[in-house]
Image (cartoon, chains in turn red, orange):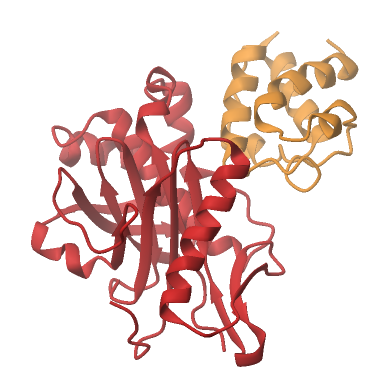
Length: 235
Length: 85
């Protein structure tokens, strides 16, 4: 069974981004649409720097791209064509409704600690997706979903010790597999790539296929996947 | 600048975004950035911005969408350079 259609997430390590590049019109004009620039000026200004806004929207758009790429292998990432239509700062009491999130080595749901939660609507052509973004001083992470209900979306962020590509890649795979093994104990789960080259965790004997999305940047790794309603598992 | 010179310069632009430097050294006009060089699609934006800076040109979205292989990259860069001249 396909446990869900797709998955899309991203993370940006804010402290290693090139601030002057991201703040230059030559860069952000390739990322943001005119309406999104107006969104910052009219609503978001004062909540975060413009550069942080650029990276927050970048991470949302990259998440959308990953989500859609699984079903459109020819899709190429042009962020200004993926448009954030709505961006809301969400109150602290909604953190628990923003998916099943874990941070750090120990897992669990963490709210507060200087973290700000955003949500909204993002469109690409006729596709409409919803997103949740968690913003901290060190990183911004995003996840997308086809509905505004993130109750069955699992995502996590972890810091790692090495920044080499191989270490990031193996760490993020170990991170998501650790989570999935905690949910599907006893199963013989393997990570493979689907026809689009996107990662899927499967157990062929039980015909389980879970699309997973993986992201890493500098010393942070992140995953996301969704399980269908009724698959009440784990914590 | 002819196509050969632009191709050689493009190698420098692509270097930070290409893991396999041997593949990069051997690119031709038929090389696809995503499928052959395994460049992350997210880095295409960086490459377009770097190309704009290197050649002092502006690359619009319609042109940028074509820049997934070396031939089209060279075509777009030449067109924009000629337009500027």
